[in-house]
Length: 133
Image 1 (cartoon, rainbow, N blue to C red):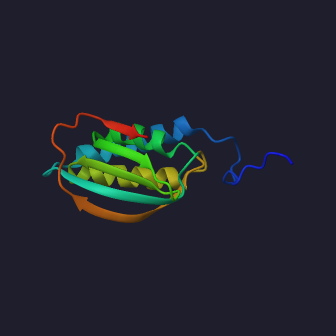
Image 2 (image 1 turned 60 degrees about the vertical axis):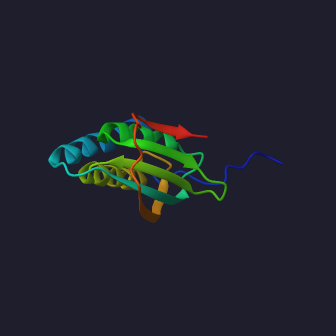
C-alpha cells in the first residue's frame, strides 16, 4: 500500500511559490490598510476547505503582519481553521481580501471559503499575530 496524498495541487503552469503568493497578498494588504483608519474592531473568522496541511496558518500570519493586524489563527478538529483578527476596518478588509487572493492563486495549495464571520470584543494588550496550537 503506497502513500497517497489526499488532495492535488491546483492546475498551474509551474510549481507553486507560496512565498511569492504571500508577498503579493501582503503588498495588497498594505495598500488597503493605508487607505483609511477607523475604530479598531475584532472579528472571528472561520475558514473551510483545503486549509489544513497547506500552509494556511503560516500564510495568514504573514498576511496579518503585513496588514498591521493582531490576533491568532488555529486549526480546528473538524478540518476548518479559526482566526481572530483585530485592526481597523481597512486592515481587516485587507486581511480578508488577502486570504481570498491566496485561495484564488495557483501558487498555493490553499482553497478556502469564509464559512462564518462574527464580531467579538476587542482584546487588550495583544501585540502580534500568532499561530495557536
